[in-house]
Structure formats: C-alpha cells, structure tokens
Amino acid sequence: MKMLPSKLQTIAFTCLIVLLFVSASEAIWCYRCNSATPGCGDKFNWRGIGYLGDPCPEDDDICVKVVERKGTLETITRDCLSSLQGFRTDIPADKYEGCRPAAKDHNLAHYVNTSIKELDVKRDHFDSTKFCFCFLDHRCNGASTVALRGSFIVMAAIVPTGIAYLLRQLL
Image 1 (spheres, rainbow, N blue to C red):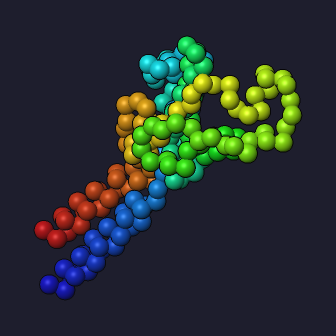
Image 2: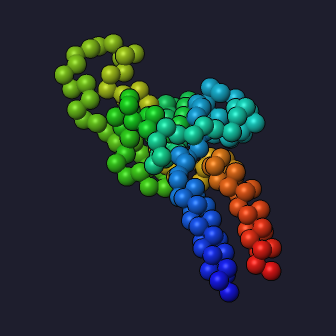
C-alpha cells in the first residue's frame, strides 16, 4: 500500500508535464496569395497555389480575404491581418468572423494636391472593397486540419509508454 501513493504521484507528475506542453499556443495558418496566383481566385484551389499556407507572424492573428472590384475586374488577396495592417488604412474596425465593406479613411491624402490619378493616393481606384475575416480554423478559406505543436507530438509518443510502464508496475 505504501507504493500506491508514489505511483499516483508519478502519474500526476506525468500529466502535469503533458499539460505544460499542451498549453503553449501556435499561430493560425492562413493562405497567403493573390488572384494573380493560379488557384487563388474566387474559386479557391490549394493545389493550384502549391502549398498549404503559412503560419501567421502573431499568435492572435486572423486570416483575411480582401475582394476588390473595379467594373468587371476582381482582385482577391488572402493573407494574415498583421501583414496587411502595415499598409492598409481601410481595414474595418469590426474584425469578427464574416465579411464587411472596407472602412473609408477621410483623412487619407487630404493635404495632397495631385492630378495624376494613377498614383491613387486616396485609394479610391476600386469601386468596392470587401474584407472577409476568419479565425476559428486553420486555413479557413480551404479545408481545415488541426496543426499540432511539435513538442506535443513527441510527448504524445512518450507519455503512453510511461503510463503503460506504470500500470504494469501497479498490477
């Protein structure tokens, strides 16, 4: 009977170690391409772009799909929100799941006086811009799979062996 609490302590310690590895988070994976890339247009085909996405730079990142239309021309960009925030001033404040129109920045190019419309300093080239956000699944604009952390995979291989050994010792 004296050995039983010791074995239970060992099992509890092993479970604690596993929980330490599971609690670490990994950034969401998003596709990062634009409609000039084969397979990245409106009809998305991950085989066409040739890879399964990239991890986003920040742990609390969001996948974004930007749809910009000018007449019949449509440009689609898929990326991580943190990558777009550096140069896009029209990202909507509401970034929950779903699609919404771009925000209008009335102060953009307010003090610029240029007649060269190709510079597009006011960012009004496109007739409509729509942002679609998703953060509940990896690669949420394609089939999703759960990406496991490397250390968790190693622990998943080691822990069952240790538990089986401890159970053999108990019985």
